[in-house]
Length: 146
Image 1: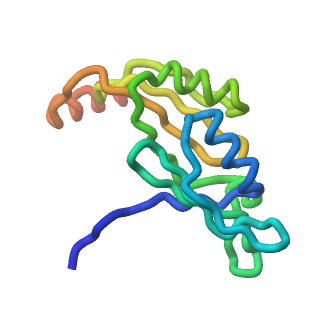
Image 2: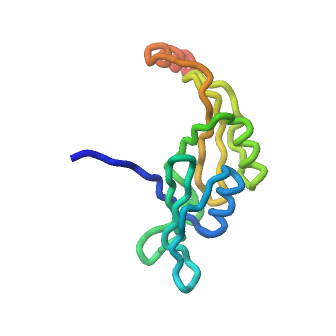
Image 3: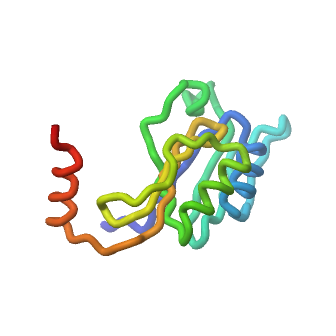
């Protein structure tokens, strides 16, 4: 038995608005959506480059609630791009909240953090240097000295 793929599946409070936001913020393309007669989106797929992110509206009758409804998210989505500064600026322009401005990190990436209007946290970064695991641990230790 082997794993073929893994997908992030986001629940949002307004899937149609989220699809529009992700288009403007990240330049993604909608692959398709399944919509109930009431307008509630039961399933949609967005192309983040070659990767797919799935999303739906809330289904409280099934225990499926959005990050904005529960008031938190334990998950951060790492979006690896070619220009973190530009992507973060574009996301903020589209309505995201900047949580941490882009900066060069010890693990060899320039990254920053935004929170989308639907409560999901995105770490957006690009590669700046190759860092071996021993060096990364040393830098991590240095950064966390009291």
